[in-house]
Length: 122
Ligand SMILES: [Zn+2]
Image 1: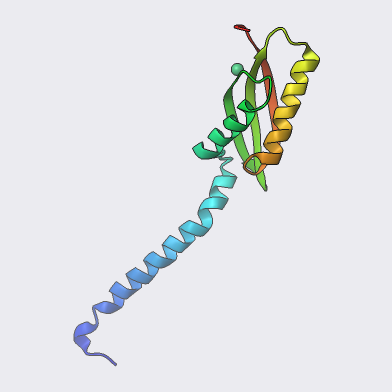
Image 2: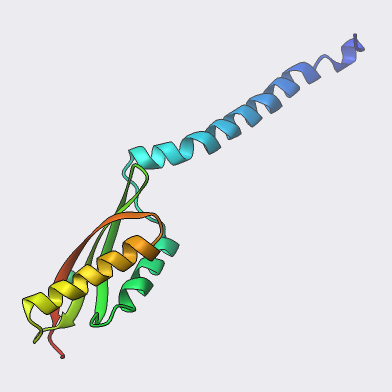
């Protein structure tokens, strides 16, 4: 249909369409690959998690926040420091409160494991 001098456009167009297909495949596959690789929450979500936990009454500090994507959301492990003079029951209540708040307010959090440590300064 076209002038034969434009025949070189056939492989050029083929490469362009291949590029679009590869780019679309990358966009579609990336979330699944992240899930399969047990990836965790991104930096923004980890900061949101820390912020929520620090708002819980009795939490002095939080560290070692780790997350793992699984199914529909994240499983989170973290360490919190509380007043070392508190009873086990009081520390347990603080940990339970942190867990509930994270599941309610956090970014797609399914379950939380809280490790309690005494803050030796208090
Ligand atoms: Zn720790």
